Image (cartoon, rainbow over all chains, first blue to last red):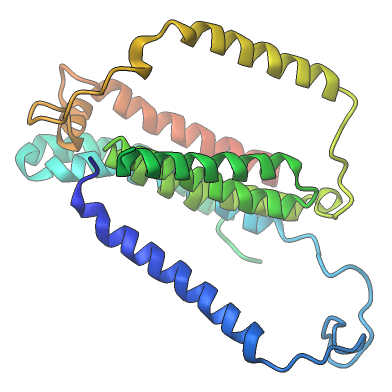
Length: 119
Length: 169
């Protein structure tokens, strides 16, 4: 059987989905909708839109996503250690310290290379 | 049917339907969004198996990071974001054949497995928890060396990704 500690997550999930659905349904049911071709056009400050709406995004987004994955995996490694951290005391700190320092090498490389710069 | 079985069937159905949508929708951004639904379904399956840590990892890594990377990668490659992306390519027949062979092989291999009929053992105090995982990761008789090497792997991946994206700048 599923432990009860997941119950709040389930309730939150159902509430969030239900509320989102409710808002959309209410808007559809009661909002006045008199569409014309001009109203349905993408809004571009009054101009007739030119070209496709989707543009190529910057490489910086991709760079940040890749770095984020790596730091995310770092978090996954931290989590089991953190649960046990108090009992492991200095030995655990040493182990996780080496782990972090090694990762910092990559972080410094990214920083120096300018991968975290926006411009 | 118990509540668990109904839940499992519901989640399995949602996961399967979403994964079919991932491969059948023509819009790549939508495919990535359906992929998030699929991955979330798998996370809920982990919860049903009482594997809370895996559920958290699934949400944090796969939904939180990898799906976002997929969406960014799709938005970065303009040609495939259009609605006109082809659903089939030249090797689709071969791919379908290989998928069938794989399915048949798995089906035959699992046919004699008794696990489908037996009820899994209940969780006891001896069942490994996240604390045991943490202890195993840092203890010298456990996996402390692979644990530290994992960070080297992460650094290598990071430097590689930056090099590929930025070149010799």
